[in-house]
Image 1 (tube, rainbow, N blue to C red):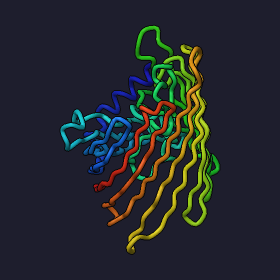
Image 2: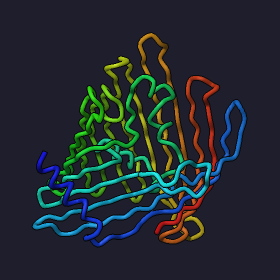
Image 3: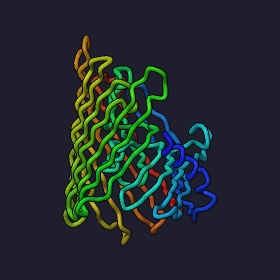
Image 4: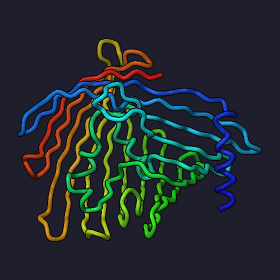
Length: 317
């Protein structure tokens, strides 16, 4: 424990000593939601956030931090502020050791599916299903606390990362998360495994890859989730495409995502849930973009089927 205590003490004083930069984005959009029960208009600003990051030399190493806070400007979106991500760590030629709150090594691969920093469509529909939480099934979403080690890049292409996720309650199971990421000029591939991550006694495996040619990206993924508590298991198949083009002389990108989920739960009939979404981002400047989106969540039960369509504006700083 002494190395961890020393790391923590060093990092407590880091923000005051390091060169710190401010970053973030103000994001707001309106959407129309429609289901069998009716329709309504919703205003959302919960994708806005700001953060501070910096680093400073510590002997032969570098100490760093990254703190991001969610910021809402519309009262009905909930509490403000709210912690989104926190990282404090030490980095050297031997890798990076980080105390973190946020995405686990497995959950970092969610970036394969997104177009912007934070997209308006919901990955909960693409990777999950309405009964996932009650069946104690992890879906690769949600934030965790942990201690991670990221190894140096091997041959300029392979990155390995491990994380220990404390149980944080008496009698709980310690979690583990591992990811191996490969990338070259045209291909990316991620294989990740996670035990007892966002859900105790859960097991999750994910394999994702994509291929790029002349700006066009085509990708696919497979996710398997099981629970030792409920004996439930789930399979997710997902595909995605990013298409760049120009609109009125401005660069724009269209992202299309489709997924199919199958849930097998003892004592219940098998469930299937389908999801698709389209997100288009139009870059007005290098810091300002407008976006539009549509999404459809299609579970077995007709009463839970919901469609969304909306437009918004994102300003980075």
